[in-house]
Image 1 (cartoon, rainbow, N blue to C red):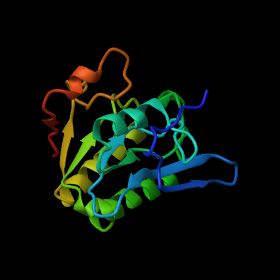
Image 2: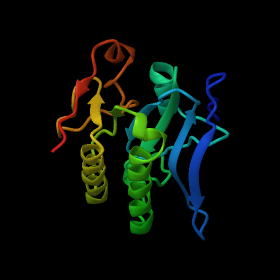
Image 3: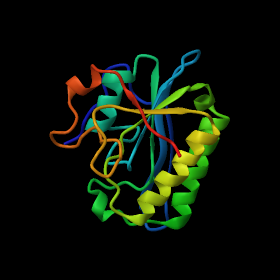
Image 4: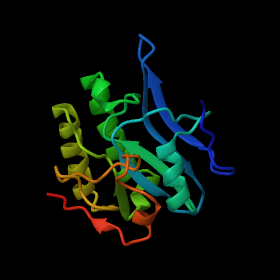
Length: 181
């Protein structure tokens, strides 16, 4: 079943690709409005959202932060609904990291003072590598990274859709600053 974007919040910006085998990658998805600074969220990986359909995670981002526009980035760019099934492509991984760096340094993201992080537990070394690289980018671009709720037992910011872990009440409190080494 397809999830629709909230009315008036459909994305107007997407950067994605397909490889020769038809595997889809999404590097950036968002609604960027002239004269406004969008909310930027970094999660683990894209699930379903593209120009034509949303997903629960993107709709939560829009609901809580989307008044001035929104941008969804991910540690890894490959579409997968179950993170344990992610098939990593080293070239795509590095391309995603380069796109995030360019967006946060030079693009509309250069105006964003803070970034919300919600990627949950990272069960593969590839995802931990991506996290390390993204945290380096946040540090070099002087972005402040925040999360809502409590960190996971492994010290990661909880994912927006983790069952029983984040709900509407978590967004009513103050966001907490993520330590960037």
